[in-house]
Image (cartoon, rainbow, N blue to C red):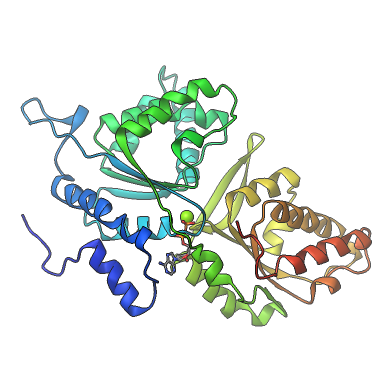
Length: 365
Ligand SMILES: Nc1ncnc2c1ncn2[C@@H]1O[C@H](COP(=O)(O)OP(=O)(O)O)[C@@H](O)[C@H]1O
Ligand SMILES: [Mg+2]
């Protein structure tokens, strides 16, 4: 078998980043690396061999190792570790996807299969996912929606049966997934399945690195035109340099789209969020889906921008309640953004929230 002579272990890659100063040493993160490394080695050695359902008649059945369910508080480095692992794993049959986006795709697939009159629509969807994929890496597994809750069990069963290795990050221990959800009893076999097929590892780091990175950093920039480069730099720092992808969120049977999303960070312009006919439910869904939101180009609003101002108030309220970190560029200080139209008095509360959300401790915990 060909082995890359330059190949470094995950621990070596991690240590090199510490030496270069891009990461700080963290024993809790360090402890996960050997676990990921053994998955990586197995995948690199077996990615092209058939397993499970697809094993040939005479092929020796190959049992894949248990995957990894990495959970813990926000900013602990879960996504960073998962990216390190997926990037370094030298196989073509790998896919890293935000869990939310993945489920979206699954729903589309199920819908299409139903329209074709397929009786068990999960089967062709699982088959399509499995085709050419040996490693599935999900970022931010969370289950809040009953339609998700009712299909993940059968879906994952098929993925595991086909020998796919799953690695996932989550803010919750499996037992707390879909907590207090409707018909939760029907969901419990999924938790048991995760426990059986994955090693559940809590990333017990005491540090919230996202807060560290933003602590004391400027998060409200004006005027907007000059802030572009600084905001690009913050985006690059928090996302690890990705360009991001649109994130489609289900809201009452519709979808609302956040134009750019990567690693829990959303990015949009004021116009993309507030000049479209979005309402409170849309902003709540957005606030729920991100840890940090970048809103660029907030203009000076006049009386004729009443609708945009009203939506902006709803947006800030939703972000405030969800304790999202907000980074924005605006035409002026918060208090001078909307001073003369209908509701400008109420806007004072929004301005005050914008100030509060700039505080160093905002969004912690
Ligand atoms: N050991 C570390 N030293 C410095 N920065 C880190 C470290 N671990 C993670 N980070 C950075 O902190 C931020 C949050 O990490 P992330 O992996 O997104 O956290 P989580 O997925 O657990 O919420 C990212 O910008 C990440 O690159
Ligand atoms: Mg994350």
